[in-house]
Image 1: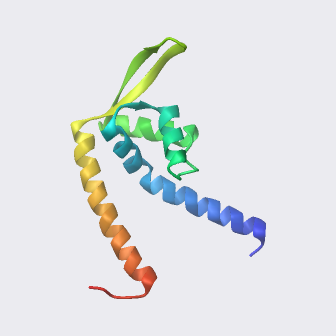
Image 2 (image 1 turned 120 degrees about the vertical axis):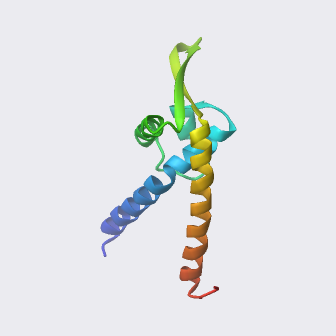
Length: 120
């Protein structure tokens, strides 16, 4: 595989992995405190999810809001227009708990497979 094609494949794989965990990561961040899109994107990037940017965050937040897992509200800003903040709902907290359990099972099973062993 050529180096340029390898980079495309890696970026595509990373993008697919991000899509699989972005909602859960956003809910986890919002479970600590409300936040707005740009701030959430920066936090995810700082934590190592480099592909998380405003172009991926806002559609995800809209999707979570439509599902009733977060709610949005406006906060006036002295520096400019009001910002739309998001906070997790009780339904979102419940979903996050379920998703974390699923994630932990998936990581454990994947780890067993990648190590080439059958631990159970």
